[in-house]
Image (cartoon, rainbow, N blue to C red; front, side, top):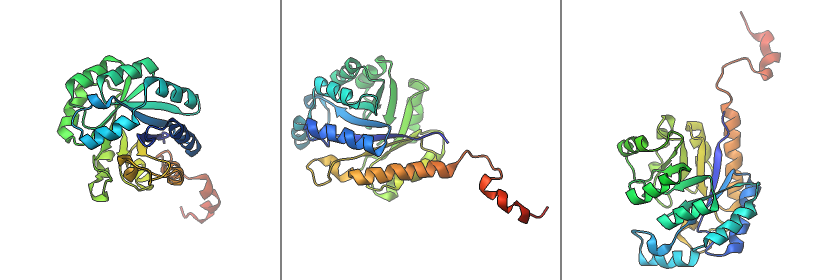
Length: 255
């Protein structure tokens, strides 16, 4: 079983406070996820957002320099990733020399934005909320074969009836971007075939901000990671054989 790549999505849960962002990195490291991720944007350049969303994002905006310091703070203890929401932010990711770009749902068919993304030559992880199967199948023709595709449903929070985890059993998706508040869903997704999990987290759900209602608190993030790692052990190597623990019972086998 390949180890699942776990992304702790910090999004804007830092609320523009750099010290909170650092504490979130500490939590992600303590939880033993593989990557911590935040969002890079210039609010005035993000399309299709409300006035209230714009006001909130104005408060949450970090500079390239701040994200550079956050990357340094991560060091070699954990991978650091960003999701850009506008073309200047894509250039910012290049400036920060990050290896992977996470593409948000809703931007896969934004041609100028995706052209800027592709021009970086970086590896991509793409969420597919608000997309149909046929659209994703067609889009895959235009991206490198090492691009990773995440099943996603853009509802916040997401109800179980709209999870549709069965799609992970095919070859279309590499993982899940999960918007439920469940600590069990990621482990179930791994059992269905996911090898990448993205999950929102926060210091406290009582903090202000739209992401809090889909975010795990620290103890829940720790629990989620353990459940995923347990499922990886349960799945084994996929080869049917006599296990070591069965050896002492072989005398009862009738040939």
